[in-house]
Length: 187
Image (cartoon, rainbow, N blue to C red; front, side, top):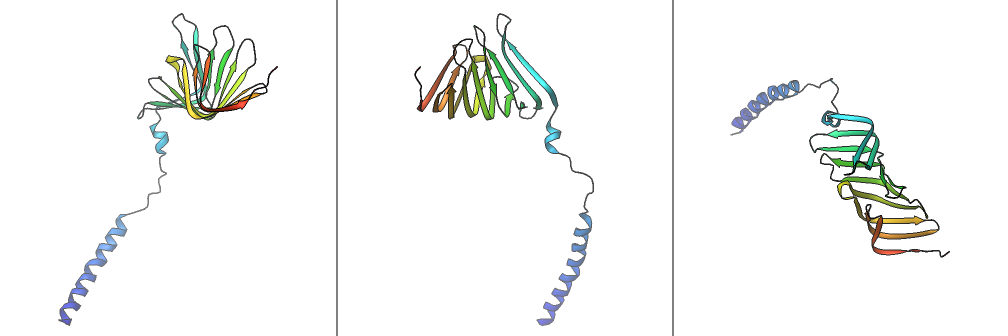
């Protein structure tokens, strides 16, 4: 019995040594540089990109600009670095939206702006206001934007805070959704 176990152990060792050597010898290290998978997925990029949307009467309805825009075909979307969006007001003046980054699907039905999003409302008369949040979804065809995140609105000495906001650009109206509190200074 002892002799058969010894033979089995010797046979097992004799088989394992060549198998281990073959396994280690076949897995060689590759000295070639690795490809950046993210760069391989980009099918085009544009520096100093500018996208203009026109209304029915041929006037500018919105202008989106970005120092760098990258297009990814697999999800079918564009990534925007530091996008700026201009939306003209009817009587003059404009809404200006700034963010650190943006995502826009190929359908251009919406633009998700994120990272220190600032919406500046510059009316032709009256005080300018600034709305600050971390993410804002802009729907260009509907002239509408919204967020469910905290928002801070500053107009002169007045300020308000809210949980969520809706902006109707065509009506030049902003609605603060819930938990609104702030300070108002009467003239």
